[in-house]
Image (cartoon, rainbow, N blue to C red; front, top):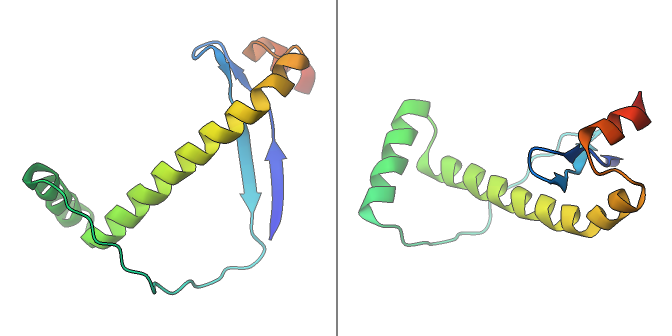
Length: 104
């Protein structure tokens, strides 16, 4: 697996440094599903999930897997942003214009 990191992109809209991470994989691998997770959801969420499944043609399990992956990716991104923010600030990257000046 090859990883590339594109760091910085301060955002004046959000008042923070946004870190973009680009990951490239040179090989496609098939991962088997060998773990089961049981969760409890309320009737409203169950109905929303059922409707989304019918609209998309995807199973409820696939929709939940995708949602979980998205949430975990967001949390990972937020943690990396928190760790890397001081480095961007130390470089003086406080606005979008600061970054554009560096990369242009």
